[in-house]
Image 1: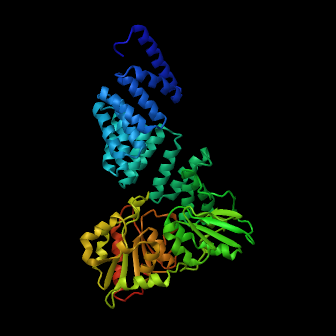
Image 2: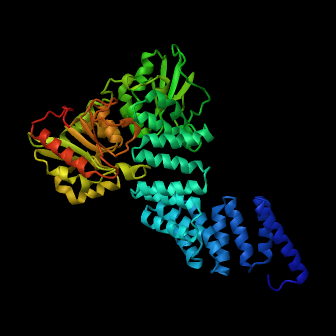
Image 3: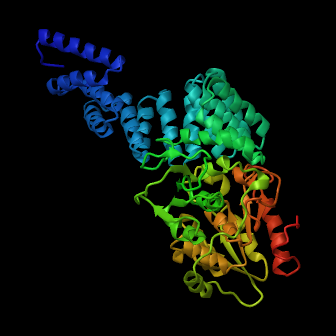
Length: 537
């Protein structure tokens, strides 16, 4: 604060100290008032702008924080802390490339800045550069091995790289440093699930629940332990805690009505609303029929718009809604995936009635000519990747290059139903496929196309549910630790009679699964084994 009279300078320094005290007390609004006032006087003081910017960050005013911290940076470009907070502000805005640049600047200016290395790694992971993320967090740990969050992050990155055993050790080190960190205990349990060691996973989830019986993730992940083992009745009560993992909680209807808990439905109107993904809606829509059988007077269903036209073909609801459609008056409301619990579903009482989706004749007629093959050839559809935004996509998607060995099977004609960026892989195999993807504008289109195929081979994605709900033969490739609904150690599914399940023998390994699939496909294509014969091993 140059060129300011000593007595004025003393008063300004007093205000600066007061601002810092308020900041330490987390009274950020009051601190900001002081820093803004000082910044209007000391217009060349980088430290004042830095404090103002950091305070704006604490108030979640990230655009303003960036603007003010950039002024500080212009005055003092060698300060690592302001670079750190500019990076943090960009991270909060979801601008990860910019965040990487600023955290990178912070560690250039201060090589032993462990927090900056950790956050640089976090942003590299957001950009799916996991090897770089791992390098950064390991660099942080060389600076300070006592950082529990760094060990936790390292374990997370190792999991993404398929190094689960090594991840367990990092998680355990994090627990040594922070024994009561429930999130790390949940992470250890989760990685044991990925390794198929469900008893160990259960132990860790139960440790957390001993500390906090309502912990959302521990309850939800414990439900998966039961559900994947086919112990559905034991799993459903824990599964209800999934709402705690969703920002904003349960997506209730806009109208305030009582949640249905199994009451008598005679003469009542029930509003059922979708949750989670398209595959979940396709799988659990069958419960509307059960509600009908229980005598519900009027049934309203809200679906995702993309599947609305198709699920309407069940005819089970009186009113079909999507998006922000106004919800008519009703007596009760319930989330679709609460119905298995409320209706006491066990493995032997899963509602059947497959197929229950029925594409309209117009759609079937539109797609039949587009799914043609020479006489005697097996018409096989393929989907090699799910949504790239799915949290488990790195485990479930296979890729066309790995699956290309199936294309060598004689007497097969191949049809791609792949959508999104993974469809770009078709370029190298264009001559082997009829590419249906660009014309598949809705799930109704996809359903009609599937009806003209003999078989679908797919990873675990919504199209797998769609084919199975249509009663079409579908071979589903599952990771070593699959989604709970596919259970364990079985090649069939109690949810879908026409599905055959092919399972990884160990995490990350698809080659032996594909070899088995190729052998069976050769037998089917040659006519030696009926497509419906699920006794083949």
